[in-house]
Amino acid sequence: MTDTSAVHAPPNTETEPCGELSIRTLAMPADTNQNGDIFGGWLLSQMDIGGGIFASKTAKSRTVTVAIEAMNFRKPVFVGDVVSVHANLVRIGKTSITVHLEAWVLRRKELHSILVTDGNFTYVSIDDAGHPQVIKQDGTVILA
Image (cartoon, rainbow, N blue to C red; front, side):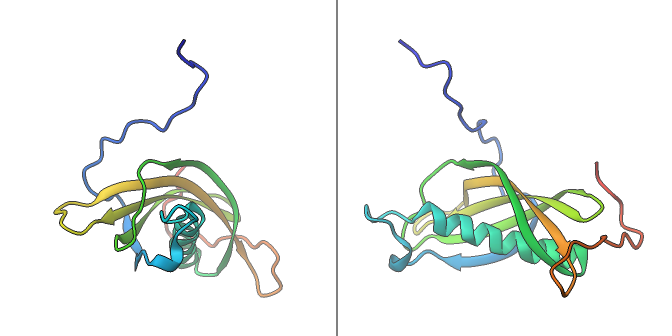
């Protein structure tokens, strides 16, 4: 019997990263779980760091993560993989920014990067007291 209620990530048709390179790092042995694979939480944190850098640069202010949605863990990450996080602006709201993040790896002995994880992260622009603040548009196009 086939489980028709299972939810799977949409198939990947991308052959190269989409968006601005935000962070690049190396997966190390200290980043593994009990099975010796790179811990999904570590990868998620790298994506959040990359997205935060992109969001802060776009908002020209401090930002905080308020939501993560549509995360797709497509392929494993291994020790020694070079992990690159690429950011694409999805939308800018009054105080928030939604960013689509992709994590790609370059494995040893491989010539092309592989998409391993992607998802949408939402950040809120905050002032020095930690309160939400309006994002100044200064001529940038607001994507809906």
